[in-house]
Image (tube, rainbow, N blue to C red; front, top):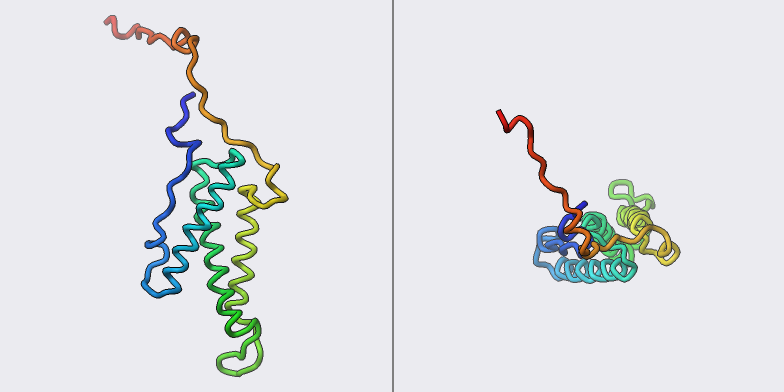
Length: 152
């Protein structure tokens, strides 16, 4: 069985410009944070021999959850977890508080899935490294057989 080239390698980092478009200072900071989060998570997985090209989308979702959490946390820090309702002015949970909680749950679930969290580092299997072909491999290479229909 031949491994797909790059299957045990490091997935390419997403284009954060496309995922977080805009030129505001907050958006630029989000892109910089996303790149740092991606590198940190990929490095952690690579150190544990658990990084694969197939982890790319899970890593991307994790980074987006982190950035969403950061964005919501900024708003909660600015305005509080309880804010007045737009029409009635009665106290309610801030939508940013709800988004922050959702992003936190999502990040925790993905960290568990990827075995990134300290409690889960021992879980999960390691990515098999492709082995180097030995002398027997060329000897045992299958010989193409002749199809009897070709003799007609």
